[in-house]
Image 1: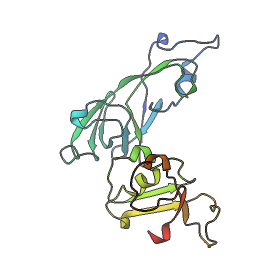
Image 2: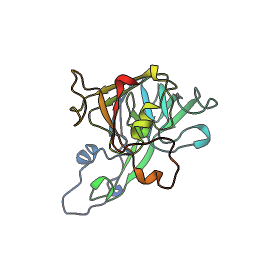
Image 3: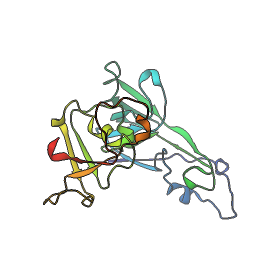
Image 4: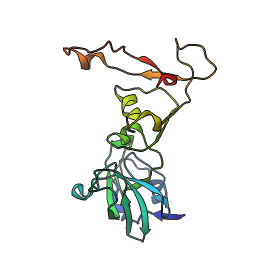
Length: 215
């Protein structure tokens, strides 16, 4: 395991909004959304996800998953494992970048910059990050029901067939779900307004309960 720490930046690269000092030690503990941590713990063979658009033509877009093949102080060589056939399997180089978080983003009262590789370990990812990607098998962990239209569909459709989909439901039993020994039901959120004016092929109930024993 190799720890890659963010490069030091001049103190002028963050802005004070109060008299309280913003020390480097404090900034290193912050992990805003979309920003890599101060210390990246990586090793050759680990799966990472890209957090920035670097080169769309080369397949280096936000959300691309890669496998680390070689590491140096300022460049990481990785292999793309998602995307189109012409991109998947390509070896690419990922440099350190200086990334800025502006005041107000992620409830931060000040702006600061971090120089780090724009990646995070990604053996698991959110449903939103998985959108548009295809896997041979996928495990879906639901500690709570989905909360937005289409989320459950996105999660369940990452594989070409149901044989590669595994779902772990860790949230409490839903109201109205049949009494069984195991919790095998979760919500499928549907916004009826989206289908207004369309001719429905079938009745789509809002907040329908999905039985995974029948999938």
